[in-house]
Amino acid sequence: MKWEVFTNLIGDKKVYHVGRKFRENEPLHSGNVEYAGELTDDKDAAEALAKDLNSGMKKTMTAQDVERLRTYITGSIETNVSMREQDKRDGNLVSVAYWEGAITATKLILNFLEELMKE
Image 1 (cartoon, rainbow, N blue to C red):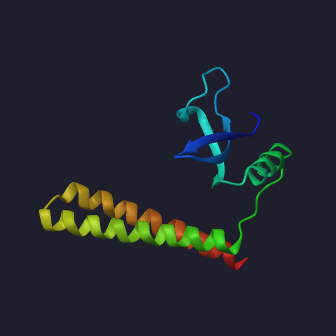
Image 2: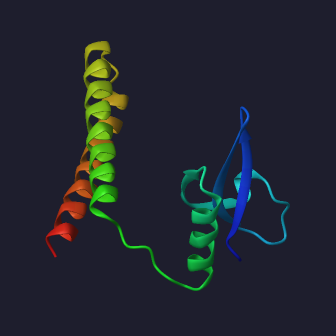
C-alpha cells in the first residue's frame, strides 16, 4: 500500500500524519491504517516522510528516538511494578502473575534495545 499524508484539524490547527491502509478491500478508517512518524504541523516534512517510505528508504533511529523509547519502556516497567504491588496488597494472585510476566517481557525488550545500541 502507498504511504500518504493525512490531515486532521485539532482545534483550529492543521496537523499531519503519514499513514497507509492495511487492507485494500476495506474502507479507510482508524482501525485500517498503519501510521509512521508522529503528528506534525509541518506538512512538507510529512510529505517528505511519505515520499521516503514509498521509495523504500528505512528510517534509522536517532539518539533522541532511542532515548524516548528507553524512557517509555522504563516508565512502562515502573507502572507494571506499581500495578503488581497493588494486586499483591489486594491478594489478587492471578493479576500478580500477569504483571510478573509483563515486567519480565518489558525488561527483555529494554535489554534488547540496549544491546542493539552497543553495536
